[in-house]
Image 1 (cartoon, rainbow, N blue to C red):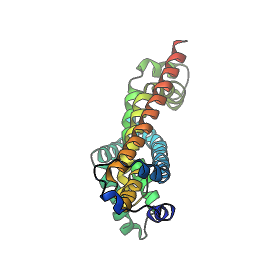
Image 2 (image 1 turned 90 degrees about the vertical axis):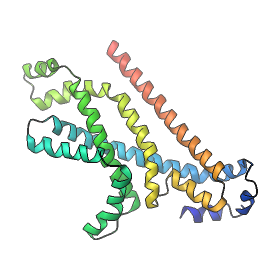
Image 3 (image 1 turned 180 degrees about the vertical axis):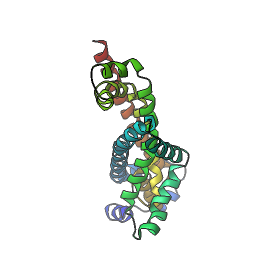
Image 4 (image 1 turned 45 degrees about the vertical axis):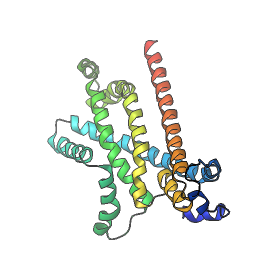
Length: 243
């Protein structure tokens, strides 16, 4: 467990010393805690990347299904999107980690449960992002593709989706950032991402102010970095369109 690792690596720390320094900000505690917090931040990024990556696939399929003329495709996709977006991610995590094992008959690994819940949640929101992006493309683009002898699928693949993807880069970036922060909820099932790592350190050292401040700074650094990357990506695509 992360708490055992922390004890072995920093056994020289006296937890009670932090209770006597309630009004002091102990930078040495942060320095000793950084390795474990960075490890948690890495797991947070891993969960977020997997969730949004799988969410892109789920969202694309769900968005195309919602735009389909067939009720057999449109109705299930609509129900999925409405149910996921209408319930809290925390409840979805509880259902997958605590309720689903009663149905399948065996325990689910916290990492698998975390990725599954976050992917299904992200997929529903990305489905709406894709749907909005596709519907923002002029119907003339569809007609042009069809008039060239392309099928509906070919028109979507080669004409509509590339244009729609450029338009949905900003909301996709926002979804990544939102999922990065929402991934802290998986700490409730014991998965040791950034927030859970902070909780474990605080349980050992009682350095609430120092650790939560450090955790907040790490989250802020990650979100600002991603925001700058998305802005640069959007600018690059905009320049390619202007040429």
